[in-house]
Image (tube, rainbow, N blue to C red; front, side, top):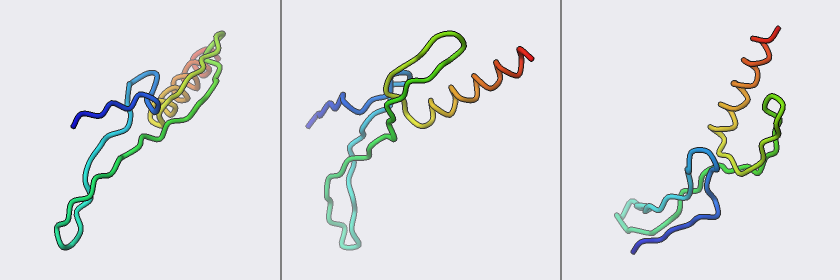
Length: 74
């Protein structure tokens, strides 16, 4: 079974929902989904505004890049 979920995907890296299984102590298999931490954000990078759905890892990277740019200008 191939299932494509496109609603919860990161605009930058493409990270999205993954499908896996839960295993109980009795080794029963139950399907489940692993959802990425996607946030809808509008942020200012330099002079331009960027809006979209970003995962937490990409948000952290974007914030770090903006701080480095600000410190480089000073």
